[in-house]
Amino acid sequence: MERLNKITSWSDSAFIAAKERWDSIAKPLGSFGVLEDMIMKIAAIQGTADVDISKRTAVVFCADHGVVAEGVTQCGSEVTAVCAKAIAEGKSNVNAVAAAFGTDVKAVDVGMISDVDSGSLVKRKTSYGTKNFTKEPAMTKDEVTEAIVTGMDIVRDLKESGTKIIVSGEMGIGNTTSASAIASVLLGVLPEKVTGRGAGLSDDGLKRKIDAIKRGIELHKPSADDPIHLLQTLGGFEIAAMTGLFLGGAVYKIPVVIDGVISAVAAAVAFKMKPMCAAYMLPSHCSGEPAAKGLLDMLGLHPVIGAGLRLGEGTGGLLLLPLLDGALALYRNSHTFDEENIAKYEKLS
Image (cartoon, rainbow, N blue to C red; front, side, top):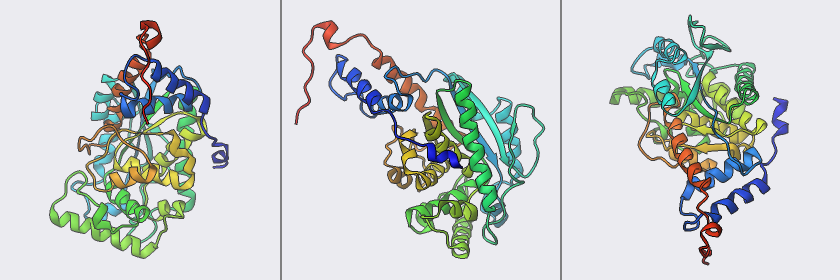
């Protein structure tokens, strides 16, 4: 965790150089909107105006949640292992989307209740699922730290192997309950304001989910100002590992894409730990889950996709990549004002 002290600001000179390049292209100033900002942000992170996101990896952390015992999900925890194996072996939803955009997928077991027989699954299990947070803390403080460190280690290893951009993802039955509980505390709003139906709940199921969150918050009384305790009492191993992923992005200077609401919760926890790490995050879409917009607003980030996505696994985050590729195609365009002998646009006040 001492690595967090190495987080520094990005390269202002690379940011300015990237903006100058955008402004030299024969088009109205700022006319590619938020995508221009994202390319400048990546330039600042990479320390060069020659932005490169050619090698990309989606990291899907997999774990189980004890709160499933409260009837807050449509299916049981055994589904996590089935999906994790499919992801590891290239057969799941995230793999199909990733393949379309030339992206590698890494599935990591950080806390499933069972051991999956797959040589392709990265095994970094902290424990066999969290405890039921309506009765006791979900994790110990040491377990939270271990999961966060795992996320940072993954970033370090990917950076060393040449990955230029990371997409965050997760798989864990019950994790929208944990994410909604954390969001309620972080945003200071009632659980019913930030709790959705997840993968699909009846009205009665949604009531059980909200009730479980309320009981967990009342039992542990977590604070937004103590993010480690917040994760320990209400979190999940995959959420803690994603928190480490976002922190690692800032430590190792590599952009990390926020996927949906669970990813956004992890990003927000990372932000509470080290506010500077938000500079290394890229928002992809605003999830259909009710907590999503508030979390992104808290981070000061503006997603470019508003399609009501809520599939998870990193699928929404992956959809940002072709938009960035398109922006880079324009960014690298030689059709400039100087070359075409056209008067440049001027910024109007």
